[in-house]
Amino acid sequence: MSEATHDPKYTPKAVLYLAFELSNTWWNLGFSTGLGRDARRRKVAARDLVALWHEIRLAKKRFGLPEDAVVRSCYEAGRDGFWLHRCLVASGVENEVVGAVTRPRNVSSIVRQLKPEFSV
Image: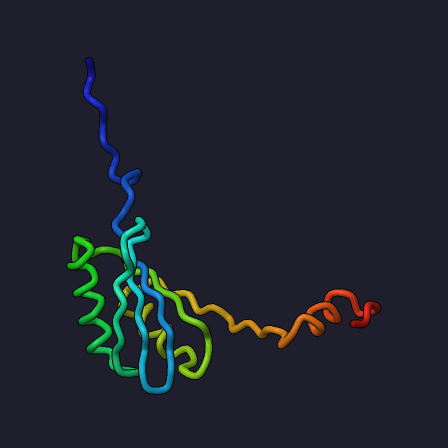
């Protein structure tokens, strides 16, 4: 019987997922590996990049990921603009900025948007 060969390009890479909730004073961070484990939630002072990198290192350690594991993050566009995106990408983080969604305030406005001829 012959041995199975192992091709590294087909081996899934370790990934740490990071979701930001940005505010003026605090950033809430949610870390996961996407494998059904409990998320790691942390809060750091807004714009404190030293604390952010420290929390990323601790999250990798907690989930048993190698130091060179890929980090994929996302946050909603808003008050912090794109400086954070540029900083994350420059540091090797795969980041997505999600556009803010405007939501109608009530059901009546939803119906009017979908069917202008229908009045409630």
